[in-house]
Amino acid sequence: MNQKMNLITRSWDKFEDSYRTMAFSNGDRCRNDPDRKMTVRLKCGIKNEITDVDEPSHCETSSPVLVHAALD
Image (cartoon, rainbow, N blue to C red; front, side):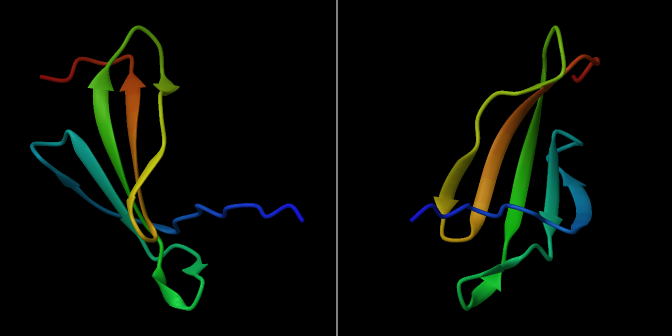
C-alpha cells in the first residue's frame, strides 16, 4: 500500500533569526496529532532551490532553501 506524506502548511507566521528563517503553521492534521508546522531556512545560492526536507520531530518539517538574493 502506498502512502503519501502530506506536508502542506497553510499559514506563513513570521520571519525569525534576522529574516533568515520562515515559520509556517496550521498545516494538515498529522495523524490525530497537532497540525503540521514547517521551518524554511533561507540560504544564499546561485539559483532558487529546495535542497532537502527533514522531519526533526513528529509533524514538524524543516527545509533549507537556496535563494538567488543577497542574504547577510
